[in-house]
Length: 301
Ligand SMILES: Cc1cc2nc3c(=O)[nH]c(=O)nc-3n(C[C@H](O)[C@H](O)[C@H](O)COP(=O)(O)O)c2cc1C
Image 1 (cartoon, rainbow, N blue to C red):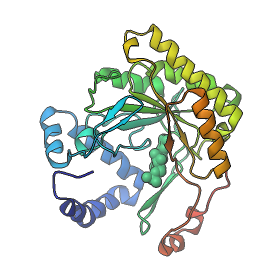
Image 2: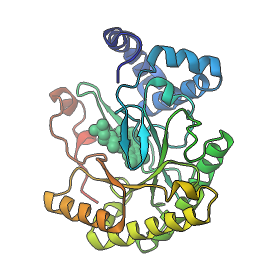
Image 3: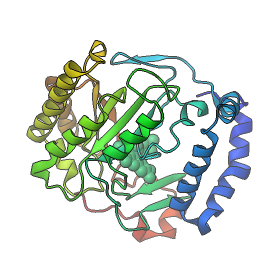
Image 4: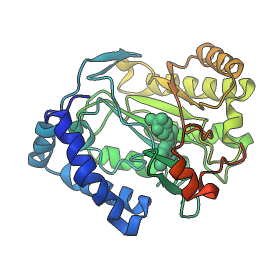
């Protein structure tokens, strides 16, 4: 992504002013900095004049890309997890992103894991994510998108919009399909694609849904539901909403091959690579020294 402001200036301003300021917010608590940033961006996205200022400064998108019938005006989008509840939805395209993926949202609202659950790796310029799908629930996110006038295909947010859906923690794995389906029904007419999250390490058992049988049952059910909803909808001309499957980076190659074959056979439109890793390779020694417990690789779940 090439900002309208010179890249070197943006980098220098971020390293010299932005990053140190962000690291001070909330006494250094990264989740407070994250929430505060979302509040700012919500404010910036609220009026056409503010959006125009953002667009002028950062709105360059680069070369368009077409995937599954969706035109993305550039190659860089915002991944799931940054704006789980679609709060700053009118700001993201003006920062130069070609799409945004809200969520992960779950069938029911849930608070996520106990805090602290987000940890900075300062010298590695990374973050450890143990959030656990804190979100307002699919119905609430759908209401927010509707209120903002976002509908599938209308680009009201200035770009295509996707939503990542995951399993509610208290829902048993055997009932996962129904939980995902309830999110699909709330969101299918509002978004340009749906991402099936079966790869977060922070919901116990979720990654087991990447197994061939489980994945096949889940993807088939969601693809079928998207087809049914498309037939019943006033947007039937658009066809079923594309469904992508987000996979974990820690799978063996053979498991990746299997997951890809299952996704294709079940009618998924693509794969999102990849989710948060459980690996801890390549960390700066200072980060390891600072918090050996914090960076410890949790047992795979
Ligand atoms: C704090 C945090 C929260 C995240 N939450 C989600 C999420 O809710 N759903 C999801 O699919 N991915 C989530 N992710 C994963 C990112 O979308 C992305 O896939 C991951 O960070 C790997 O990309 P990267 O190597 O560019 O960081 C989260 C990541 C972080 C750091």
